[in-house]
Length: 239
Image (tube, rainbow, N blue to C red):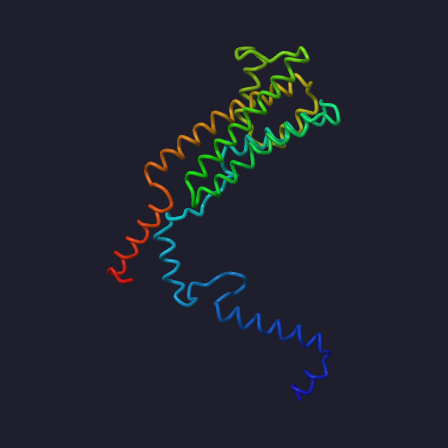
């Protein structure tokens, strides 16, 4: 009766039922329940144990969003996007150049952080590209102030001291997007300059850490060799 009933169902519906049934079989086969992987999947316990023991090999815990340098670079991008589109004339090529430099100053941190999983060299290169992009942006802000007869605040100017303290405390770009709406172009440019200098310090520190990490652990080939030797040791030298 069940079979006869099944064949009375329209063909398209039968196909959907078949696909759903097959997906249930595959879920049970691979030990997937409620979207979570279980540890008993064909040798899964050994795989999980190996992953835990080799957690330093091909590090996968990179989260560039937690880097203070990335958070500050995001603030710089948001400030620059508003500044360029508000205070520069439509059609001015500097708009795109400033926004692209700010974007590069953020995106290359993310790309370098992820690429660093398999290439320490690429990680350092992209982090330095990030720094170079921000220095290009810094010059644009300085040019804006100079050619318009506006003031770039001296380091010990009370306004600069106050701005440095504020920028040091706040890494949430939403705060800057809100605050700059009430500020003059001179003030916003000086805020951006302060953020860029602070981000540059963080990036230089990040590059030094990357260099130290490379000297301590080497590149990906060395990590692969060490991981392979350790696996051989744990398994009695068996291939």
